[in-house]
Image (cartoon, rainbow, N blue to C red; front, side, top):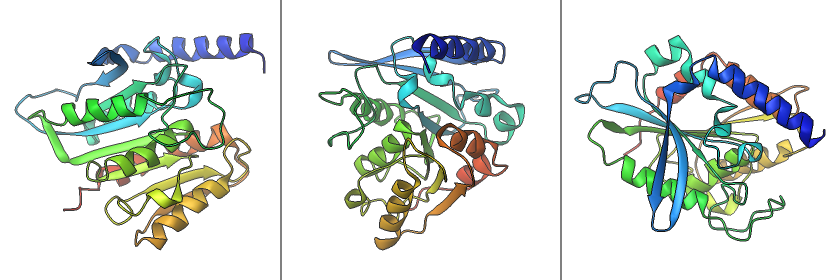
Length: 255
């Protein structure tokens, strides 16, 4: 697929998002030293500063990297903008954006994918942002969640390793990670893994590998494979699961 076609598809997707409430995700930046993290944030419906709300962190894929602070909303944002989602699972929803020169790799080598990144900073910035954001009085720290697709699925496993006590549930979609780095969150964080059985971009064996590692270290992951589904279809199917948000919000941080 040519870059021009990809650009047209991206512009069309963003145009559709604008028509469906994209403006409700407020544009913000987080600055730490000389580094800046772009992010979009959806405020809880009928926000009351005296209430405490869950937090849902969402990590985008490699195709949504950039510095426009918009592209990260292409996949997943519609789910959180649905009337039912906002009423039943009212929460803060945060979509950070990694620049084109970075990825959600964390502090270990970017595996076998060539993201042309010399040093990964973005996930560290997300962690600093979350550490700061979760100090707010209007946050329910026992109901903090993380989801991610593709590169963001890898970031989900990475941030669980780096902040195992932060999250009450995680949903990595067609992701991957280091099976040697699951022991500190395997028993603590309920995980629902999604993957397309025909994925040629990130092989479904990678999700199996991570599930087996979590089980090895005492965890009990839930895993869903989609028959005859490739890479992109995995998150479309995951977001269409009737209990995707219900399962996530049923979880409370284990003490």
